[in-house]
Image 1: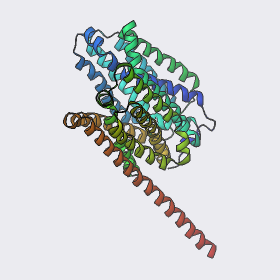
Image 2: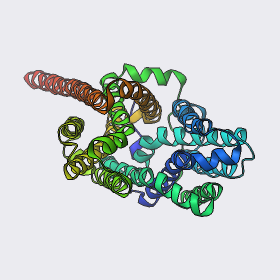
Image 3: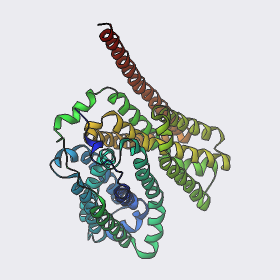
Image 4: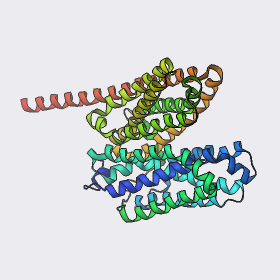
Length: 410
């Protein structure tokens, strides 16, 4: 099938890319806000903190399903309107949460948010290909994931701070305003993007018959699982081994966030240099950073540097594997993007769960060892995927050369 996606817009639509970045940032902030507002939310709604915590799990589960089926269910709708609908969902979901009289209404709002998150994430790769030329896709993705990094860093501390001063409901109202702003920005900047190749249900399964997809998705799964395991239990490690608390702990996590933002923002340079080597090296260096923490984690400065390096390398991973998708299946980027986001959500869910079990059995060293193993497996899977690609390219070039020689001889 011929790829027409990247030919829709010859001129880069950077204003549109920035509007998508704001929408994604708003969705991420809304997703993680309950983590910093559990106590007041539980008290106000008359439920336990554990019950309110399920609002995050439900959102993630819905997002995983939505990422798979959004492209299929909206195939006849202009992608411009589909993308704007995610900002509408961001606004409506946060309004429902802000004015929820009970946990049931709040849960409905979180389900709507999950649909917006899964749908938007699943379409990111295809959207970037529609808004900028092929050679600028890594830059567009780095802008979007840079916004994601900022949102991830700000969500918890900003939510906690604002919650103490204006109340948790008003925090969600502010997030709803982000949805309104992103909708208006998208309305004025997004070009018409008709879906030229309707998605079929069998496309979701046919994706895995493509060369390199299985090993590439496996690499994505294990590297993101490594992230989930490591980051979920980074704080206990810093508190018990590095012995940082309070403001010092906040500072270390802030350094991590800044490094992750820089890694995502500037990832386009190593990816444009050599995407394959960049993804392999980033995953390998993530494991080396964790190994260094296990050896020198008691030294505050060294631990801070290693955490920052890990965050920077993961920033390259975040952008790189989405970029890999746009280059590998450009003609079915929406279907593949939905599958990739589902794979990532599943890996994070399993990683956090298995990591908790490992933590109870073997402590932080056991968790970090498991994280290293996952990163190494992800590195090996990436090497296999890229090796297959090299073999295919070389075989194709050799065949073309043979045919050319044969034709010349005739």
